[in-house]
Image (cartoon, rainbow, N blue to C red; front, top):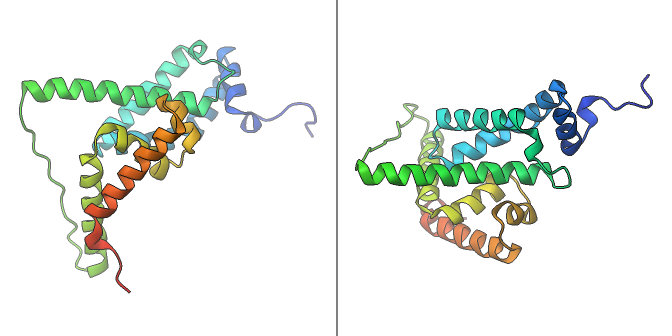
Length: 192
């Protein structure tokens, strides 16, 4: 029975980062298990539903963490810091893509439709494809807030800290994004 020492899974994120800074590899493993899935989903949603790119970004982010754990200020929230870094990585990717887009016009991507004949599955697939398309049509600042809040489950305060804006701005962007998506997807609203 251990009375004085917590197991690695009981430590806070910030304590794990301190342990990682002291060379504890199990702390890194614990952080990776806690956040890799959430980050993969965040990157996928922010980077044009590209699974491979999302996976690469997760690995790049965790490589930075393991190589330079001292970059984290342990007086801050690890989750907020982590998503701030992820958000900045996406912004840098948008800039790179804009440069590429200006140099080479038009790679057209299409989504393959499901071959299943069940009406509900077809409607769900159509809705999801339409939702993803409309979400991607939002500008980055609105898409980012909507994704962090509704797909990643972050609190308004956390989003404000990550994006370095006030909570009122987060609420405003969230309201705009939600209203836009509701209007664009109104054909899918249930009728009673």
